[in-house]
Length: 281
Image (cartoon, rainbow, N blue to C red; front, side):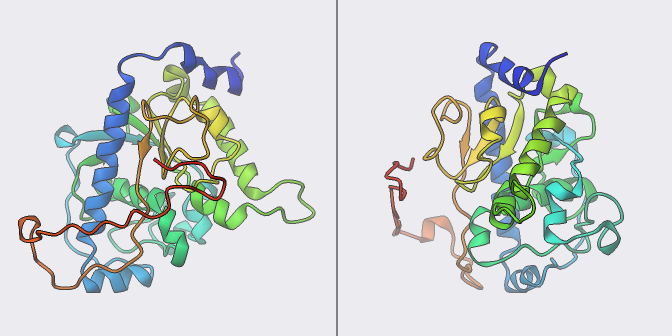
């Protein structure tokens, strides 16, 4: 019987030219997140989001046959995602996931928003299935055989921000415990064993997130903020996707100016080295 380490490392010897497809698929998935944020940029939606709710508006369920990307999302227990936001099934939608047509659990503000990509991508997938407004670029499917990629809805960045400290009498942090339980969950799944994890999308956007699990899950497609703290064999441009930080500055209100009406591009490069002097890509 395969162990967690052997089944997850098996992909190292079975890489194929199709790996680029999964990176492209994850990039399209991320594009869907961008469009979702853009659709919520109006002042009323922004105010509602800060209060933990998005305003209800008519939507439709997405057609998987017309989607750019079909995604199978695991039904992970609440402790891995919205449970970190103190959401309970009875308070929002009845079931494992919130009903995003009526509101979403509030995500903490401030610097937490920088690495909130796992939250928004999960909401986008839920919206595609429930009929809330969404671009329908990435659509959730219930049959893994129909999926292009498998999405792991673990809020790794939030887990690190909230649970990385050891709380006595525990000998390990809750963040590390969640990573261990996630590895055990995936190792037991036929979807992971079938591909060795190569078609799985795992979000580890916080540079300190998934410190343990990254060395077990590395055959997957990681969505990261950079490669700064990853060995090349664990994360690299051949298989993974770099997503920018979530913008924490409000958009201009009532600005309908198009791309061709903006002749000047202003770009702030920011720091290209981390505190540990590792270059950022």
